[in-house]
Length: 209
View (cartoon, rainbow, N blue to C red):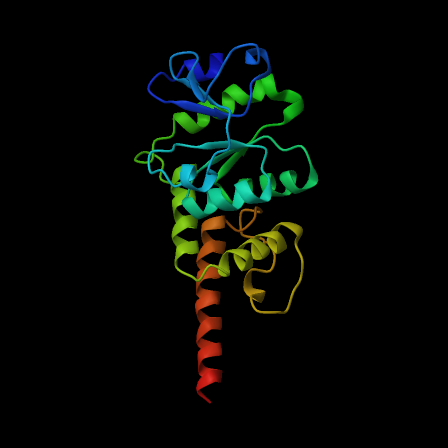
Protein backbone atom coordinates (compact mmCIF):
# COMPACT_ATOMS: atom_id res chain seq x y z
CA UNK A 1 0.00 0.00 0.00
CA UNK A 2 2.82 2.38 0.83
CA UNK A 3 4.25 1.87 -2.66
CA UNK A 4 0.97 2.83 -4.35
CA UNK A 5 0.39 5.85 -2.12
CA UNK A 6 3.59 7.46 -3.42
CA UNK A 7 1.98 7.97 -6.83
CA UNK A 8 -1.01 10.12 -5.93
CA UNK A 9 -1.78 11.09 -9.53
CA UNK A 10 -2.40 7.46 -10.48
CA UNK A 11 -5.25 5.20 -9.45
CA UNK A 12 -4.47 1.60 -8.54
CA UNK A 13 -7.32 -0.89 -8.93
CA UNK A 14 -6.85 -4.17 -7.07
CA UNK A 15 -9.09 -7.00 -8.21
CA UNK A 16 -9.95 -9.50 -5.48
CA UNK A 17 -10.77 -9.62 -1.80
CA UNK A 18 -8.04 -8.25 0.40
CA UNK A 19 -8.05 -10.56 3.50
CA UNK A 20 -7.71 -7.87 6.21
CA UNK A 21 -10.78 -6.11 4.80
CA UNK A 22 -13.16 -9.08 4.84
CA UNK A 23 -14.76 -7.90 8.08
CA UNK A 24 -15.91 -4.74 6.30
CA UNK A 25 -19.09 -4.57 4.28
CA UNK A 26 -17.85 -3.87 0.75
CA UNK A 27 -20.57 -3.71 -1.87
CA UNK A 28 -18.36 -3.30 -4.91
CA UNK A 29 -15.45 -0.93 -5.47
CA UNK A 30 -14.21 0.93 -2.42
CA UNK A 31 -11.80 3.81 -2.05
CA UNK A 32 -9.33 2.73 0.64
CA UNK A 33 -6.32 5.06 0.67
CA UNK A 34 -6.43 8.12 -1.58
CA UNK A 35 -5.74 6.48 -4.93
CA UNK A 36 -6.22 2.78 -4.09
CA UNK A 37 -9.39 0.94 -5.08
CA UNK A 38 -10.58 -2.62 -4.46
CA UNK A 39 -13.00 -4.40 -6.75
CA UNK A 40 -14.39 -7.64 -5.31
CA UNK A 41 -16.65 -8.81 -8.12
CA UNK A 42 -15.89 -10.40 -11.53
CA UNK A 43 -14.29 -7.97 -13.92
CA UNK A 44 -14.12 -7.84 -17.70
CA UNK A 45 -10.32 -7.86 -17.86
CA UNK A 46 -10.23 -7.43 -21.63
CA UNK A 47 -12.39 -4.31 -21.44
CA UNK A 48 -10.33 -3.03 -18.53
CA UNK A 49 -7.01 -3.44 -20.37
CA UNK A 50 -8.46 -1.76 -23.45
CA UNK A 51 -8.67 1.58 -21.60
CA UNK A 52 -6.21 4.04 -23.14
CA UNK A 53 -5.12 5.56 -19.83
CA UNK A 54 -3.78 2.34 -18.28
CA UNK A 55 -0.10 2.70 -17.39
CA UNK A 56 0.59 -0.92 -16.48
CA UNK A 57 -0.82 -4.27 -15.40
CA UNK A 58 0.42 -6.17 -12.33
CA UNK A 59 -0.20 -9.90 -12.68
CA UNK A 60 1.18 -13.33 -11.83
CA UNK A 61 1.52 -13.85 -15.58
CA UNK A 62 -1.03 -16.49 -16.57
CA UNK A 63 -1.40 -17.03 -20.31
CA UNK A 64 -4.72 -15.20 -20.62
CA UNK A 65 -3.49 -12.09 -18.82
CA UNK A 66 -0.16 -12.09 -20.67
CA UNK A 67 -1.79 -12.44 -24.09
CA UNK A 68 -4.41 -9.78 -23.41
CA UNK A 69 -1.77 -7.33 -22.18
CA UNK A 70 0.25 -7.87 -25.37
CA UNK A 71 -2.84 -7.41 -27.52
CA UNK A 72 -3.72 -4.07 -25.91
CA UNK A 73 -0.14 -2.83 -25.58
CA UNK A 74 -0.08 -2.66 -21.78
CA UNK A 75 3.31 -2.92 -19.97
CA UNK A 76 3.54 -5.57 -17.27
CA UNK A 77 4.86 -6.16 -13.80
CA UNK A 78 4.88 -9.93 -13.37
CA UNK A 79 5.11 -11.89 -10.12
CA UNK A 80 5.29 -15.50 -11.36
CA UNK A 81 4.81 -18.64 -9.27
CA UNK A 82 4.31 -21.62 -11.61
CA UNK A 83 6.07 -22.78 -14.78
CA UNK A 84 3.61 -21.14 -17.20
CA UNK A 85 3.85 -17.81 -15.42
CA UNK A 86 7.65 -17.99 -15.25
CA UNK A 87 7.85 -18.67 -18.98
CA UNK A 88 5.63 -15.67 -19.73
CA UNK A 89 7.73 -13.56 -17.38
CA UNK A 90 10.88 -14.56 -19.26
CA UNK A 91 9.13 -13.76 -22.54
CA UNK A 92 8.14 -10.31 -21.31
CA UNK A 93 11.73 -9.54 -20.30
CA UNK A 94 13.06 -10.59 -23.71
CA UNK A 95 10.38 -8.55 -25.46
CA UNK A 96 11.06 -5.54 -23.25
CA UNK A 97 7.41 -5.22 -22.22
CA UNK A 98 7.59 -6.28 -18.60
CA UNK A 99 9.44 -6.25 -15.29
CA UNK A 100 9.70 -9.46 -13.28
CA UNK A 101 9.48 -9.52 -9.49
CA UNK A 102 10.72 -12.57 -7.57
CA UNK A 103 7.89 -13.44 -5.17
CA UNK A 104 10.44 -14.60 -2.59
CA UNK A 105 11.94 -11.09 -2.63
CA UNK A 106 8.66 -9.21 -3.04
CA UNK A 107 9.26 -6.61 -0.31
CA UNK A 108 12.56 -5.55 -1.84
CA UNK A 109 11.79 -5.83 -5.57
CA UNK A 110 8.16 -4.72 -5.94
CA UNK A 111 8.64 -1.03 -5.03
CA UNK A 112 11.61 -0.88 -7.43
CA UNK A 113 9.52 -2.39 -10.25
CA UNK A 114 6.64 0.05 -9.73
CA UNK A 115 9.06 2.97 -9.63
CA UNK A 116 10.72 1.82 -12.86
CA UNK A 117 7.36 1.65 -14.63
CA UNK A 118 6.09 4.97 -13.29
CA UNK A 119 9.23 7.02 -14.00
CA UNK A 120 9.62 6.05 -17.64
CA UNK A 121 10.08 8.97 -20.01
CA UNK A 122 9.51 8.04 -23.64
CA UNK A 123 10.95 11.31 -24.94
CA UNK A 124 14.35 10.87 -23.31
CA UNK A 125 14.45 7.09 -23.72
CA UNK A 126 12.34 5.73 -26.57
CA UNK A 127 13.24 2.11 -25.82
CA UNK A 128 10.87 1.83 -22.88
CA UNK A 129 8.34 -0.72 -21.71
CA UNK A 130 5.54 1.47 -23.03
CA UNK A 131 7.18 1.90 -26.43
CA UNK A 132 7.89 -1.82 -26.75
CA UNK A 133 4.36 -2.73 -25.66
CA UNK A 134 2.90 -0.38 -28.29
CA UNK A 135 5.13 -1.86 -31.00
CA UNK A 136 3.98 -5.35 -30.04
CA UNK A 137 0.35 -4.25 -30.14
CA UNK A 138 0.81 -2.72 -33.59
CA UNK A 139 2.48 -5.88 -34.88
CA UNK A 140 -0.31 -8.11 -33.57
CA UNK A 141 -3.02 -5.86 -35.00
CA UNK A 142 -1.49 -6.08 -38.48
CA UNK A 143 -2.48 -9.71 -38.81
CA UNK A 144 -5.57 -11.91 -38.36
CA UNK A 145 -6.42 -13.06 -34.83
CA UNK A 146 -4.74 -16.41 -35.31
CA UNK A 147 -1.36 -14.76 -35.82
CA UNK A 148 -0.96 -13.93 -32.13
CA UNK A 149 -0.53 -17.63 -31.38
CA UNK A 150 2.10 -17.90 -34.11
CA UNK A 151 3.78 -14.81 -32.68
CA UNK A 152 3.94 -16.31 -29.17
CA UNK A 153 5.25 -19.59 -30.57
CA UNK A 154 8.08 -17.70 -32.29
CA UNK A 155 8.98 -16.02 -29.00
CA UNK A 156 8.93 -19.41 -27.28
CA UNK A 157 11.30 -20.85 -29.88
CA UNK A 158 13.60 -17.88 -29.45
CA UNK A 159 13.78 -18.26 -25.69
CA UNK A 160 14.22 -22.02 -25.72
CA UNK A 161 16.66 -21.78 -28.64
CA UNK A 162 14.82 -24.41 -30.63
CA UNK A 163 15.92 -25.14 -34.16
CA UNK A 164 12.95 -25.38 -36.47
CA UNK A 165 12.95 -25.48 -40.23
CA UNK A 166 9.28 -24.70 -40.61
CA UNK A 167 7.63 -21.38 -41.58
CA UNK A 168 9.87 -18.87 -39.84
CA UNK A 169 13.43 -20.24 -39.68
CA UNK A 170 15.00 -16.77 -39.63
CA UNK A 171 13.95 -16.09 -36.03
CA UNK A 172 13.61 -19.62 -34.71
CA UNK A 173 16.21 -18.86 -32.04
CA UNK A 174 18.37 -16.09 -30.62
CA UNK A 175 21.30 -15.16 -32.84
CA UNK A 176 24.61 -13.95 -31.44
CA UNK A 177 25.48 -10.36 -32.33
CA UNK A 178 28.78 -8.50 -32.29
CA UNK A 179 28.74 -7.32 -28.68
CA UNK A 180 28.22 -10.88 -27.46
CA UNK A 181 24.59 -10.45 -26.48
CA UNK A 182 21.39 -11.54 -28.17
CA UNK A 183 19.29 -10.12 -30.95
CA UNK A 184 17.17 -7.22 -29.64
CA UNK A 185 13.43 -7.87 -29.59
CA UNK A 186 12.82 -4.90 -31.90
CA UNK A 187 14.89 -6.67 -34.56
CA UNK A 188 13.16 -10.01 -33.98
CA UNK A 189 9.79 -8.27 -34.16
CA UNK A 190 10.59 -6.71 -37.54
CA UNK A 191 11.79 -10.07 -38.81
CA UNK A 192 8.61 -11.73 -37.58
CA UNK A 193 6.46 -9.21 -39.44
CA UNK A 194 8.50 -9.55 -42.63
CA UNK A 195 8.52 -13.35 -42.40
CA UNK A 196 4.77 -13.45 -41.88
CA UNK A 197 4.13 -11.17 -44.85
CA UNK A 198 6.44 -13.30 -46.99
CA UNK A 199 4.63 -16.46 -45.92
CA UNK A 200 1.25 -14.86 -46.71
CA UNK A 201 2.50 -13.94 -50.19
CA UNK A 202 3.70 -17.52 -50.74
CA UNK A 203 0.31 -18.91 -49.73
CA UNK A 204 -1.44 -16.38 -51.98
CA UNK A 205 0.82 -17.24 -54.94
CA UNK A 206 0.17 -20.96 -54.44
CA UNK A 207 -3.58 -20.42 -54.36
CA UNK A 208 -3.40 -18.50 -57.66
CA UNK A 209 -1.71 -21.38 -59.46
